[in-house]
Image (cartoon, rainbow, N blue to C red; front, side, top):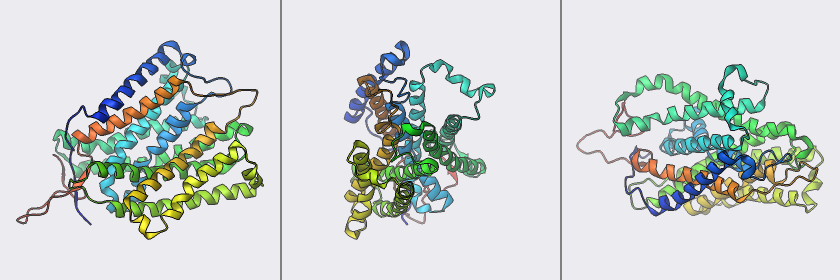
Amino acid sequence: MSEHISKPLGGKIFTWPIIFFGILILIGLYAITHRFVSGIGAVSDLNGGFPWGLWIAFDLLVGTGFACGGWALAWTVYVFNQGQYHPMVRSALLASLFGYSLGGFSILIDVGRYWNVPYFYIPGFFNVNSVLFETAFCMTVYVFVVMFEFAPVICERLGWKISLRKMNKVMFAAISLGVLLPTMHQSSMGSLFNIAGLKLHPLWRSGAILGPLSLLTALIMGFAIVIFEGSITRAGLRGKDVADETPLFAKLYRIIRWLIIAFFILRFGELALGDKMQLLFVGDRGAWLFWLETALLAAPLYILSKDKFIKDARWLFGCAISMMLGAALWRMNLSLFTFNPGDGYSYFPTAEEILISIGLVAMEICGFILIVKYFPVISFLAPKKENGQKVVTDEAHNEVAQ
């Protein structure tokens, strides 16, 4: 296995991507300010039938799913001891940090009386009987866990020589929490929709398996986003000493393949046992959305079963997008697209809701680009050894130092 070393990309700050997404951020910040000053009703179409909308369905449920790359790789690298994927960990952790932080911020935007949010963190006001409390608590703690796991990157950039042996005495606890917490709240995000009862479309009213299905979609999106981000990064750094990680992406797909198969077994098994298979052929919006999400997840199973495709970085990238969209669509269908509260309620996101969501995504993209420019996140091929000198790599080094 090739040795890797992480280092900053460097370069200009004000590039065209930064300027473009920066404009979107400013527009989003204006809409967010309007929301906090004028109230949630002034900027959204939320109502008594639809207490959640785009900010929860997309920014939270889908956004945190896309942020599961660090969690998925934590299972692979630290639990199943697959050290070959270690060079991908830092970029995955950075994406997780942004995704979960902005997902939490979207909750603050969505809460009508946002000034009451601090009560959540006061022990006397804990509502331990609420699934949402467990979800919010796990997400909050997980953000700090990811920050601690990402701390070595900051230490390297600042030149702080901190012994890894000392850090590893507590790092194992952080990694353990980093594996446990998303497992809890990602399943809870699906289970909590059971309280909606008949408001859920029958094809997504899956009862006890909503939690496992939500967990599987999180893993699928987590692994797929690693391939997606890695492919874009490598394409942008073409010509530099960046390792060709296509073989690693192909191995990751083989993991995702079994996750998709498990998802389909649970999905179709529940429909068969619940005598709901006939609903797949009625031709309504729910049936069409079901087959669309199924096709997006199933297509990579067929395409990447061919050796010539699974060895091609372009097909891997395209299939990663398909898997991300398929898993994300399941969450959107569950929470928004097929949700029917009855009593004539309807919902369609306003322009400001959409602009806020676009602004949050732009923040993540800009933040990611700027941090990889000035912090050692991206892995490059380590210089070859000369005159017997030892090359310090990400996989084996004694000090966190630049």
